[in-house]
Image (cartoon, rainbow, N blue to C red; front, side, top):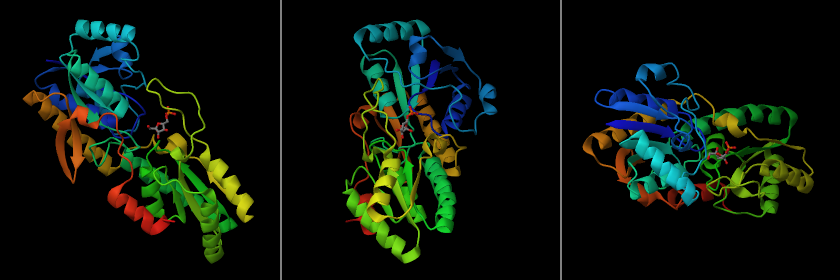
Length: 334
Ligand code: F6P
């Protein structure tokens, strides 16, 4: 078969390993192609035959060697027609779509319209893909957020200041929650648990009184500023950290600084967990292809790798809830 691999949406550490592993497994019996720039690569016909040897040098780096985009191939019917025509002419029998909910949504439509068989692999630092406990890239992003926060903390202690760290995550507070637990932040603000900023200021003041420094971690999705939207309708987020720091300083009178590591936590070399997760997901995607089990997404559930219908994960995000929200409440509940 002719099998295409693509990565869509924000890049995530571990993508290159997933692409490399898949290629290495598939090339034994099939022709493997990479589709550059996510779904845009079908529209632009940026598809190239690849061998695992071409990928090896980059396999363990962050980012995505085969590039990415936030292009929605089904944005309108005119585009969808070009997409269908190109896909037919390119003759790809199967597409492995490695992405978040948007990329996987386009994969589901590709399957539903009978344009190609698809297998989905979940990745995003946000960890918000429904149906899987973990996505490729999340663990690395958390570890990087911890590193940045720990460095920031040393200077907060030296100067006896309050610090606010804003982390990515979109509408899901996973990165903030995990980084907050791992650094025992004095307060963590997540979109799933809206809170009056006065509460945050008061908590900060109490913590400062005890130890003469304080740390707050805030998830970018706590406030939307209505920036430009991408083709899947997502607004650009970011900036709440600065606003929150100013607010805390105004209310408490304590000198407060904010840092926004932004994409830095997304571009790192993958952790052991993400490397192994990427390899396990790729291996399962390969098995699905060999078995002709299409329209599925591979997922991590309770330590096992399973396959679930890709349609099951669409239109909903995995947000901080259940056990994780209870853990949140124990430390930062109001
Ligand atoms: O979805 C991953 C993510 O890093 C989000 O956490 C963030 O809001 C967004 O992508 C940033 O996107 P961009 O790289 O387009 O600025």
